[in-house]
Image (cartoon, rainbow, N blue to C red; front, side):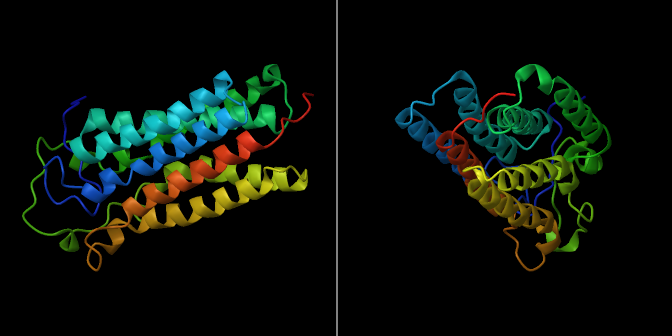
Amino acid sequence: MDWLAAIDIYCERTGPEFWAEPLNALSNLSFIGAALWGWVEAKKRHRTDVMTVILIALAAMIGVGSFLFHTFANTWSELADVVPIWTFVLLFVLVAIHRIGGVRPGRIGIGLAVVVAVFALLFAFGGDGADNQAIAGQPEITHTHSHAEEPANTLLNGSEQYLPAVLALLAFAFLSHRKGHPIAPWVAAATATFMVSLTLRTLDMHLCAIWPLGTHFIWHLLNGTMIALLFQGLIRSRDARTV
């Protein structure tokens, strides 16, 4: 694997320069903001347990990793982008199952195995890197024409990789609402926010002809908002009785 292979899969990038995606790069501050708000609220409510602190740190790492990917735009920085994202998703699901669902850690093992299997299949058969290997394999990004003249990479622009996150949020929203848990409104708001952000991520390369800046930076801003909502719901809500 060529760790320095260039990757160009977003509308805003039109060259190999470090700051070729300024909006996509700087919009990652939303994840840092979500982490900071989560930390302040956790300190205030005395919820600074190990798992909460790890989740907050992972949220900040998402911002850092995504910033690296949208500046260096190569194979190693793509890995720095995706690893914190899916680690956060996996850990948040497990923490939510335990705290909100009241499931003992030992009973989460089967669910963990299923989630890991789904992620493994996802990375094996899809994702941004898989959708754009022809571009990523080039030693250097060279643009002799605008994105307006280039076709979109795929119909969903790689967004199909986030299907597990969509399903997890929908299930979480349904179950928390059904149980009448205080976290339900926070999860519902987070789910709605993610649906909008995922739509905008999908449209990014399709709209280059009429919106050269793309919509990926809005995906970052809304996902930072989504994580902030999930944090606030988790931190402010009581833990369920363990069963």
